[in-house]
Each structure stands twice: as C-alpha cells, then as structure tokens.
Image (cartoon, rainbow, N blue to C red; front, side, top):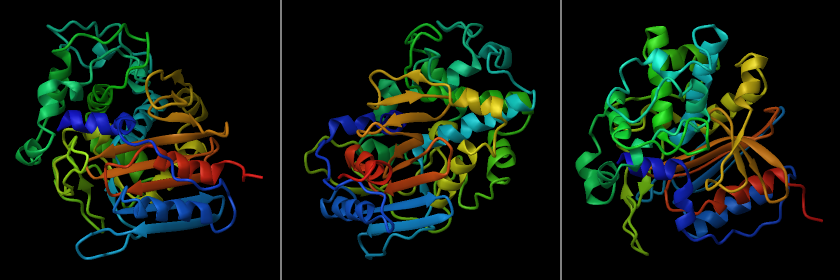
Length: 384
C-alpha cells in the first residue's frame, strides 16, 4: 500500500498512462470557459468520474465542475467537498518545520542525528551528514520506504483490501527505508522519497514535545482557518462532505476494474501524504504561504530556493516541500500536487500567491496532461 502511495504521490505513475492531451486554446478570460471545457472533456473521455477547479485571482473567484461524486447515485461534484490530497501534504509539513525554524526551535542545517539519536544505528546511513534542509528538498539520499518491494505489494489489487485498515507507525516506515542502502550522498542529487517527510515530522515532535498533528493545527490550520483540512492519522473515514474516491488499485489491465477506495487508513502516508483538504482550503493555504503571510521572509526565501529534478515531473524544480513547474508557454507556476488511491489534485499559481488554481479528480487513472492542460488554460496567455 505504501509503495502505491509513493508512486502516485510523485505523479510519475502518470508517465505510464496515455499522454494524449485534451485540446483547448489557452485563455484567462472571465468565466474561465476554457477551464470548464477541459473539465467537461476529461469526464467525457472517462478519465475521471468527476473533476473540479477552484480559481482565486485577487478578489475574484470561480468554481467549475464536471461529472459526479458518486457514479451510483449521480450526485454532482460540489465546491466544499473534502478529499485526500496525497503529496500536497508535503507543503504543509515543510511549512510546520520552517515555522519552528523561525521560532528558533530548529535549524535547517541541523543534522538529522541531532534530533533523532539512535534511529539510524545499524544502517548504512550517516545521520550526522544529513540535514533537515536535505529532507525537505529531497536530496538526503534516504531510500523511499514506499519503494520497498514487499510494501508495494500490499497496495496492489486484492492485497489492498487485505491491508486497507493496517496502521503503521513512523518508526516502522523509517525502518523499512533504512533496510535499503542510500540512493546517493547527502546533498548530491534530488531523489523523491516519502521517508524524508516522515523524518521531518518526527523531528517536529522531538523538538516540540507535541504530536505533529498538534503542531500542524497550531502553526497552519488554526491561523488560516482551514476548516476542511485535517490529518486523520489512522482514522479510515473522510468526515464531512466528500466524493467517492475511485481507484484501479494499480491494475495493469487495459480495462481495469474500478473500486471504491474512499475508506482507508492512511497512516502509511502520514506527514508525507495523509492530509485531507478542500479546493478552497488549498487555495487559501498556498495564497497565504506564497503571499508571505505564513512564514517570515527569510524562511520563505529558503522554501523557494530550488534544486533540479531530473527524471521527475518534466519542467520542474523542487524547493522545500513545494515545486516550481514551467508550463509549455514558458510561464512558471508554484505549489504542490499529489495523488493517492482515488484522488489526484494539483494546486498551483503565481509566485506572489495572488492567482491560484486548485483542481482535483476523484479517480486515479488520468494522465498528467489533464492537469497541465488546465494550468496552461488558466495561466498561459490566450492564443492569438
């Protein structure tokens, strides 16, 4: 189950899917008709049961939807629905860490071993050489626990049903990762690993004496009034209004069976991908974050300092829990994205936070082009 989450959360699984783009001329016209056209086309092409897009541009807002929340009842998609945001959770985790840096409780260049003594004993890793910064920008060289072959197998097909309610501790996840050799020297290169953000949250708990969920609420959720956002831990249900999360459970069948994967214990993703949110909350969070209303200027600069991501999502550079993506027209957008069983979402926008778009599908088989097309339609200049 964990490995499935990792592969989907990085969005690299999309590279294995059809790459046919949905055609629509780019436009930022009032009403966002081209964005709506893409939502309708995505559903019509059966790339998702339903798709939504929530746009904030200064004081203007727009919400569009297509398809359904529930294929059995025909219930439509709604603006206030909650969904699993996958690896977009990493932006929240990085923000919590950087808030503690601003408060003097951590330093980005602290070695991991300073805060988690003994955790790496008996492994091939040198925690004195791995920094908090390297966890957050994915250059630590620490193996992704979710790539472990046995772990991956528990999240595919029928095995997922056997393990959907399993609870994992952070220590278990890290132990799985440390049984594998490093993927590189610390700071050497970008290599996406959920383990990094599990360790980051463990450091938060060590530095504060509070649970990570408590610190997330204190530093981000409560101040920004993110009423639809939560970290459920081992709770398997999504509380409040939500769409059914439809999944193929990583089937390689060209016509796979689709299952209801809404109810699921996501302790296997925790601080790396276990948060639940809404389109509105994600826009509010990223607008405040990039607008300088969450972190002091020094910490925001650190977050926006990026490294190359060769072999990952094309056109991207990775910061501290966020990434920059250059669209085909050459314009860059900033934010994060994520996927998990039955839910793919993208929340991106201008670097100043003033213009944001969050889009989500309640299925997990659409190609990455579905999201990049919507971003281009909103942020690229209109075709002449």
